Structure formats: structure tokens, C-alpha cells
Image 1 (cartoon, rainbow, N blue to C red):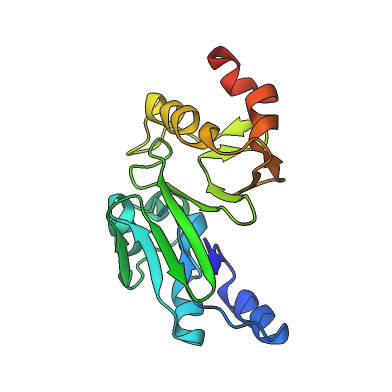
Image 2 (image 1 turned 180 degrees about the vertical axis):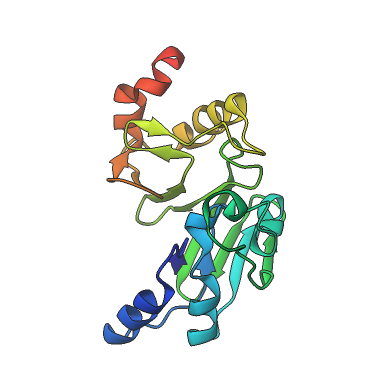
Length: 186
């Protein structure tokens, strides 16, 4: 699985080929430009599908929605996703089984992917090591991100390894105990 292929698609494709990896799909945690720029490079190189939540599906082909119009020198317009996620569910791709957890707050269509077997959460920009995702962007919502974290992510096992979209890894327990953005919820 390739989660959120940001920029430098050619380097990512080259690395995958050098390592003789066999990617099966691209899974997006949300549709902001810094998480999607390399999608078409990867899709074209390996012929694999892309998954995105319906709340962020426009981000792939609309630079206003992916915020590329604000921060990139040219509009970012990509092909539409092959799979649009409509609900929380378990998906199986190859040997991988993942639970899709809808976590609105950073964006309307933010999702996290949880591998129950390895207790690993791919949290995108919902939950970081000692931080949470921005909530000052279009379709962001501060109360929703807190609700997503407390009512969904904090229900996962404490020893769940959290792999965020930016920065170092963490665990659910560490974030419950030490995240300064969540201290008012303790």
C-alpha cells in the first residue's frame, strides 16, 4: 500500500522499482496537495487504483479543493479516484486488511486506516506526535477533529503505533497522556 504519495513522484517510482516492491493501491488519508501530488506518477507507473473518501474526492481534480491554488505555482489537477470511500468499513487489498475510520476535522473527507493485526494506524493529518491537524482550512472543523480523535482513535488499543502524515511516529497512549492539544479532554 502507498499512503498519501506527496511530491516527487519520479523519485518515489524509482525507489519502488529499485526495491523491487509490488504496490497494490494508493490510499489517501485526505486530499490536500501535499498528500496527493505524486498520485498520477505512481498510478501510471504501476497501474494501481487510488482510494479517497467521498468528502475529499473533488480534491484530485480541483485545485481549489486540494489547496494547490493557494500554495503551488500551477494548479494541481489529477485523474479521478478509482475507488470512492462512502462509509467506514473493512477493506481487503491483496493480503492487507484495513479498517477505514472516517475522521473529519482536518478536512471533510479525512480518514485513517487501521491494521488490527499489527496494531498500526495511518493517521494522515488527523493526529500527530504531540499535535493535531490544522483546523483553519476550508472544510476543516475544530470540534470535529476533537470528536474524531476522542470518540474514534482513542478507542483503539493504547499500544497502537500511530504513523502520521508528517513527523515522527507515536502511540495512542502517548497521545492520550502527552498531547498538549488534547489536555483539556483528559
